[in-house]
Amino acid sequence: MNVTILIIDDWTQRNDTLKSPRIIIFSGKGGVGKTTVAAATGLRCAELGLKTVIISIDIAHSLADSFRLDADLQDNYRGRPRPVRENLWIQEVDIQEELTNHWGDVSSYLAALLGSGGMADVMAQELAIIPGMEDVISLLYINQYYNEKTYDVIVIDCAPTGESLRFISMPTTLEWYINKVFRVQRNVLRAVRPIAKRLVDIPLPEDSYFASLYDLFTKLDGVDKVLLDKEVTSVRLVTNAERMVLRETQRAYMYFCLYGLLVDTIVVNRLFPNDLQDEFFSEWIKTQQRNMAHIKSIFDPVPIRPLAIMKDEVSGLAKLEEVARLLYGEANPAERFHDDTVYSVHQENGVYSLRLTLPFVKKENIDLYKEEGDLVIRIGSFKRHVFLPKALAERTPGRAYLRDNTLTIPFS
Image (tube, rainbow, N blue to C red; front, side, top):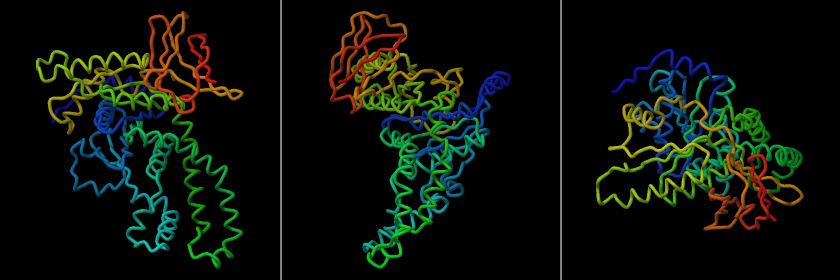
């Protein structure tokens, strides 16, 4: 096993710059190498003396496999942090284990409801898992670790892009449910439960069901502010230099910006070396070079970190250390690599406007047009492709204007 020798004064100085726990969220299309990059990032943070946990919220966990940890010992940790080396833990959220601790009354009611329809007990128990439970449980841990300052760095290995967006939106969804629906449902059932039990042949939720939901909500209090705090939380998108993958990365980038999260790095993984002398890969290399230029034009000024394809599969500490070295060099992964949210959408009097931060761009003739579903913005020699969310995609862009490095485009 390779051992990285650190200069103590170097990482101690960097550690002192962390005023509060740091949260780094990795997201991307399935199969782009997101777990590998998240594992390498956590490993590098731990090497720099930062107490680090990597939390996997993907149902199909592969984090332990990435570190080549003994599978026979995994059951000893069952959803709890597992030590990997000094300053480093991994945690693969186990929804079945968490049901007992956090969702007992909720899952019992759902299982009884499914069972009342004739479903076998075992199948009812398996299906009594509400979509999004993994996200809520993960948010509970994040909130707990942040508030208790259990770790210096919390690295989140998200599920593929769509699930990542659900994870980010979960606090807002729960807040809406608690404030708009929860109390009405609870009070109505309190009043009608004695009568309804005689009239219907399906089980009704007891008050303990609602108490469990409210307890979960209170434990999540403040997590939305933590995720939106740019000093604390950054999103890093992992992609490949392929057209289909890039489209999903572009979509994710826009939606993370719209949620108000800071995307501070784009990692472009599995790049072939430009000097690779192999006729079979020559077209691949040209395609990747062309797509890399496109990536820079889309995400500028967010930093792009290219990562070459490895000679062999990446698993185990030595390989992950190599990935971390190639990806970050001497930089501290816990630092923020970018400080601004590029996109924001505003609504006033029924009119939406898209605002883009465009530093160093001078006002000249602004051209707007759509190309393959994107809004293309051209200002002189500057050109950017912008993925439009649904609220804007079917609207017509109006006359844009540039003021204080911010381009505002109204949509009627």
